[in-house]
Image 1 (cartoon, chains in turn green, yellow):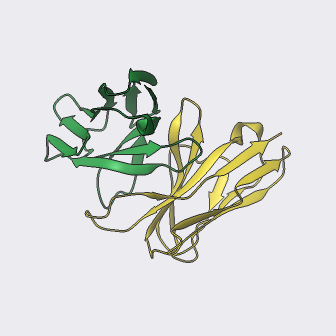
Image 2 (tube, rainbow over the protein chains, first blue to last red):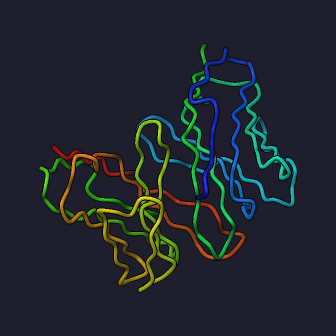
Amino acid sequence: GENVEQHPSTLSVQEGDSAVIKCTYSDSASNYFPWYKQELGKRPQLIIDIRSNVGEKKDQRIAVTLNKTAKHFSLHITETQPEDSAVYFCAASRGSGTYKYIFGTGTRLKVLA
Amino acid sequence: NAGVTQTPKFQVLKTGQSMTLQCAQDMNHEYMSWYRQDPGMGLRLIHYSVGAGITDQGEVPNGYNVSRSTTEDFPLRLLSAAPSQTSVYFCASRDRGPANEKLFFGSGTQLSVL
């Protein structure tokens, strides 16, 4: 069945360093890859997404890269700040019309001041 | 707009009890879904609906029922609660179309089954 693997499960970085979270998907028909951030006790919120016709997308300090051949995508956070501490989830979907999102197991990021 | 509203926020049940988790959205979204979140397991899709009168199973549907009689509401029913259903439940919705793939989540329901 469809599966999304996410690594690492926990990640600690010093403030100002970069953080990278990696996901691998199994369904080759997936073409939409969002990332959600969940702060402690809060609801998940979309922070960035990428479609299969794009290799990289940036939004200020965060970026997502996609390698369709290898079926993996990554979240990059530069110049990390304490407020980046949260759980991050990747997901994969076949896009509009299917409405089915398969999420990874999450990465708990801790930014140490 | 209130967005996606879930009730209750917390619930404790005894094994075998039944209950309904409520979810309502005021954004006129066609798609609504239920996820459960367990430590180390991420968000797993329970059931989803692409419109009033249409529902389908997700990854972990056993033990849960849903119905969608209106666009706004998508309740999740536990007919006979089991300890394995202890989890945090999130309802999420989105609009239709390729430009509207962002999921809007509710604030969650923390359920404990004793």
